[in-house]
Image 1 (tube, one colour):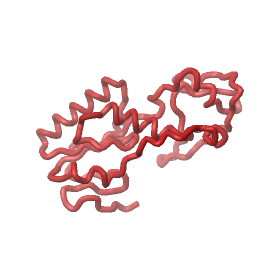
Image 2 (cartoon, rainbow, N blue to C red; image 1 turned 180 degrees about the vertical axis):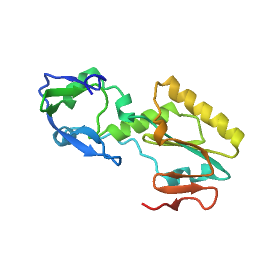
Image 3 (tube, helix red, strand yellow; image 1 turned 180 degrees about the horizontal axis):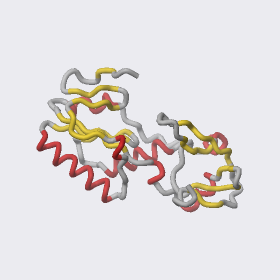
Amino acid sequence: MLNNEIIRPSNSQWSSPLHLATKKDGSYRPCGDYRQLNAQTIPDRYPIPRLEDFHQILKETKIFSKIDLFKAYFQIPIAEEHKCKTAIITPFGLYEFNVMSFGLKNAPATFQRFIHEVLRGLDFVFPYLDDILIASKSNQEHEIHLNLVLERLNTFGLRINISKSVLALEEIEFLGYLITRFPRFSSSDR
């Protein structure tokens, strides 16, 4: 993380314990135990969307893609004056994040606001944090939609996790639901 400039050495008066959350694939996600910082943080009330909000847009769509963003939070820089607040205690000393860390109270709202800005005006996409659902009525339309989304992501310098992305399918799992032409929002095996 130090070599990738995700963190840097810190002299901050703030400090939080480091916590390693286990991911689905067995790897670890580093995050601070920011309970003290979060208790002092004014909450960002930016809404996290619900898939049901996208239901109308799914009408008559037949082709779906899901794009997963690569380490999405780490693609959002933290303002210089706030980096000191993200300081974490490690066996190697005190470090602070240069990019948004998991565990920060407003990280989900901050990222959702950002991805909404990136994809603003594209009514065929449903961004939910680091996952983006694209729904189209035909293969030809879907190719155009994919290109528009990829152009936007590229413009904002966002990287895609190819191994977790799936393209141009007639049914797709998204947020624990199987999205198909009919019926909509079938629960998948969770």
